[in-house]
Length: 326
Ligand SMILES: [Zn+2]
Image (cartoon, rainbow, N blue to C red):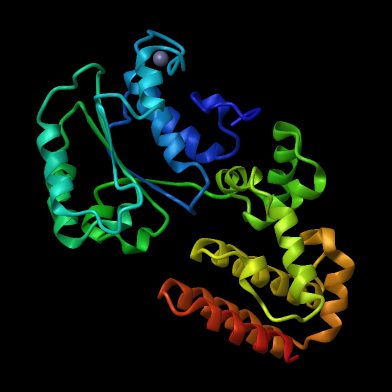
């Protein structure tokens, strides 16, 4: 995306040069058909690219497709096109009923556009019956049907499904490159851009989702309240909801990982919290590698416990006791 506006054409996409070149060559040679698997980490724009490809197929203009402004393009972007079907946003499992629906729809001709596009997001959530049922359409997809599976866990998709898809891999940006993009295209200051680029591990989509949250201030509040004063962890600063606590725990883990990396001699600019460099160095003198290992392990275990709905007050109490005993 450029300048914060909606990404409706391939030229709007930043990064993903290799993946885009494959998609564009297939589209331009009318070979973008059948089944694809878009694979790569969460929050890097796989779904965005899938929608731009769908828009190109159902754009009503003759050239320079997708134009980004015809009804075909706009409806696709808003996920309102009658020939675009997106499955599994936030569901725990994709079931056979969902796939039966695809099989039924795939038999009809497109309503408005030229191609019926089915995007199965989080395709690793296909249960075994659903995956087996999907094979029927993957085996011999009708000419006017395109299926795009999207996943960040390709290892969880059964091999018979994988082998019938053309796989396109998406990779995060180099973090320093994302930092520059956030400064140049999104007018972020260097401190915020560095933090977001490194915290999001080069994933533009995630960095943009976090950009409007006061994460930079929040994370510094956590360090000032707990790490530097060794006070017990509490809900007032860490938040009440499970989601807030998870973010705070991930931030704490990233602090200790930074210390570990600095101790190991990593370049100052490569750490996430470079804005707190002198505090990181102070902490680095306090902990041994073994202690840091144990702390990072304890925090990641706490994240798992939190997912299992353990008592969060007790969890924070125990974790705090373990963190500051060093
Ligand atoms: Zn168009």
